[in-house]
Amino acid sequence: MEKIELIRGDITRMEVGAVVNAANSSLLGGGGVDGAIHRAGGPEILEACKQIRAASGKCPTGQAVITTAGKMPAQRVIHTVGPIWGQQSETESDRLLANCYRNSLALAVQHKLTSVAFPNISTGVYGFPKERAAKVAIRAVTEFLSADNSIKQLYFVCFDEENFNLYESLLLKTNN
Ligand code: ADP
Image (cartoon, rainbow, N blue to C red; front, top):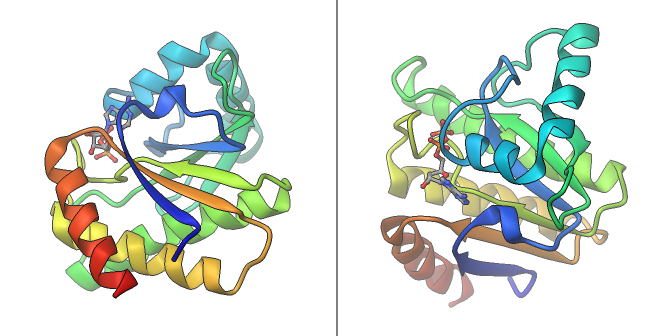
């Protein structure tokens, strides 16, 4: 899938239509990539999240919402809530994680954003097994992109070496 690119690094530096945040359902910020995005983008992002909270309440697992990217080079941030490993059955966790990728991409399409960068959702504090998460992520985005013409570029931005190596070998298999 030539629209998919693998990157090792910090997602807050990506110049894309949308950077996806692995948020929690409160939308009020947290650690990991969520903390990094709020720090890099500044208080405008939290302000926008608070408005969404006030209007619509918490964001359910697997769903996504969109805000400004504040001071980051990206145009927007899409906040999605990954499943916490162990809180549902394994197949339900897979389904919810796939929903994160699908719903984030659908939101990007709705907002006419043609490039999207994803972190490795749920594989940090939320404890989703990394290889399992990578397989779910690659499958969900590949299916989405094969049915969509508006997203031109999708980046998997891996912060840690383990995820990067996993994606590298899994994407190779997908291409061959
Ligand atoms: P979750 O709660 O969904 O598990 P985390 O933020 O704890 O979210 O971890 C998700 C992934 O984000 C992890 O693989 C972690 O290494 C990665 N990560 C942390 N900081 C950054 C960053 N600045 N850019 C990209 N990925 C990051």
